[in-house]
Length: 153
Image 1 (cartoon, rainbow, N blue to C red):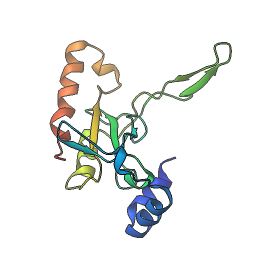
Image 2 (cartoon, helix red, strand yellow):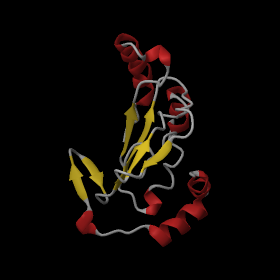
Image 3 (cartoon, rainbow, N blue to C red):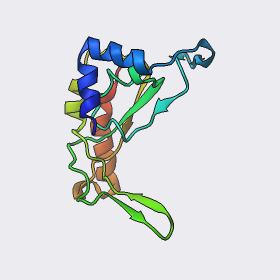
């Protein structure tokens, strides 16, 4: 699903073309909050760019900020399929992805030395595995990811 975004973000020419087609800019939308400049109020929440692969293309399609992840202390396969299903009676959708991601060490290397065009936040979660079910072990797992994910804006 994200492979097109990865491709478009990889090359300067594809980023520029994408930005020309999709980016919208208007000074009335710009805000400075707690010293952070937002070009617009439209952001991408955690859950879409789980592995921080799309940071180059997100500004070009118009996002003013993004939340990456959720990122866990260890690699996580996520839950077994099916991960989405409908509940017809209540007209709802059950989302059961289970935090599939590459883990904090790999993702932190991917983000290292990057210059971000928009403010980036990182959602951290405990690894979805039987070893982190107990509260104390879950806390240790959170703290495993925490130091890897500091990037100045």
